[in-house]
Image (tube, rainbow, N blue to C red):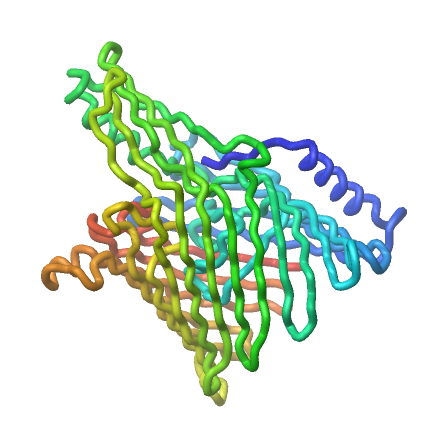
Length: 453
């Protein structure tokens, strides 16, 4: 489920891009036009299904408007084969605006830069867990590109002070939610759970319906925040403060009616506050980084009502501050040796802590890569672990039941400077007691082609 409000500004941005791409030779000059094509074929070992994965063509244009302004924008046309999920009911073709904005330099005064439009604000140095990358909602539409974000409508003001120091202030509607994999239903598990215990209240099986209460487009619901970044010696430091609605929707009310054996699940979200610190630099030739995020919500509980009476009230999210963090190191061995990346994280960027202190797990990812033939060939292997009971397991068997792991070997080959071919395997082993167990991807072979012009 992905909520996309329709604004007149979106229509204006589409029209602006159409004008720049198709009429630039007659009206404007000094433009930079680029294209990206990507597609992949996937084979699910568990389901025995060969399918065409995410295929898209993206057009991007950068246009200077004198020395004081510039326009950038991109349109992605995507095709998703839904046969694996929807049993030949249909496919999806979608056009999406990506990072389409207007830049004004030295505005309103010198050393200031104003950017308005759909944009992506990046922060943080970690490769996998990205605890500080919280301005844009996560984009899980493609499981092979798990770290993408949704471009959001924002107004951003950046003030450059010199000496690699800057302040950034931003504000926007902030009502975009996370995007989930196309063809999948992220709320199906909750619906089935509700339907399974409905006979206890109604005496007969029934069906549950999803209802979504999303933040309205009002001033008090807006996202806002700031980022401060500076460099001291060989280290880059970042400070982040953001107030927003959590982009992950959660079940707020489950309403069961015994008269007609029906139920509805009402999903909503809560405003949360994030304060983050990050540092990255070089120590003895190795890159190191640390990210810490403190988060606080107004609390969140799921209430179950049968014929209007409350029968259960369980906490999903604490109203106290809690922390997630990650630390990592990478090193490129000399004499054309391999590249090694190790990252440990307390928490995934979508995990939240409940009132009993649960909900935050630990993770470890190790990646090694080696390039050959003037960097045309790239061999790599990633190995990751999820530890749901790293410190409080009763015994080793309990530890194993709450530990999942995945591996992802890959092979990349570059054809010139524009085309890259990649093949690989993504394998997940996840007991039922782990968070990875809900993943729909167990063993997946893929072959990917990407072309840039």
